Image 1 (tube, rainbow over the protein chains, first blue to last red):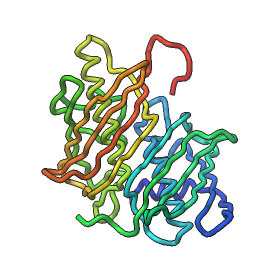
Image 2 (cartoon, rainbow over the protein chains, first blue to last red):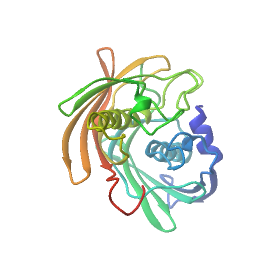
Image 3 (tube, rainbow over the protein chains, first blue to last red):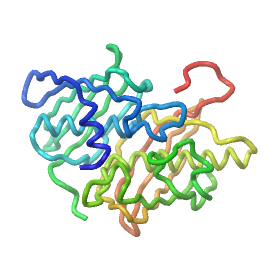
Length: 128
Length: 143
């Protein structure tokens, strides 16, 4: 497991069960020492967009109980910056569309949506 | 040119090493991610999300270069959107990755950029990003 994934896992707070096996929600708090803030940016820490996507994929993995890889980002919108020590809610919903495993994810802070993604996920790793 | 002179990102979040070429809205940047990269797992495999950042930082390096050519310090920019970014391969620590970008549109402080990450002849990921370029003379959110 990468240092980034470990850092995300360590930033997880409580989990709320979704309305079905394909959904999940979890609160995260990324502290000032979180590795993703390192160098992004000096004196102006902002949670990198790729950390937000990685956290959503990791939550989907845990909810589904299978290792997943990111196969595509169909769309992603980053609407507001996420700062250290903010409570970030990540919600994921899995569904299959034309045989493709889709994960809809939203991130919110203080009830406001700060990011939304539609991701394509696949089991296992991409062959080298 | 060393990307550190062109980007606000610093280690370990600076993924682009060098801006190889730039001109006419297009650029190529190069990266070799170390085994110690935060996105590398125990086998050295790089998390797929890094491809998004490579394209974003390559554009940022290009923009930083054009700012410097205009006699200005590199400006800030932020990733605000991704569309149809497909991931077709894996990268490993030590791979020499090239990221090519092409500016599709630049309007009202926003840029739409097509990018692709390759290793040799193999395309690992490609897609479209939207970035917001901060106007240093404007008031407002410092995002």
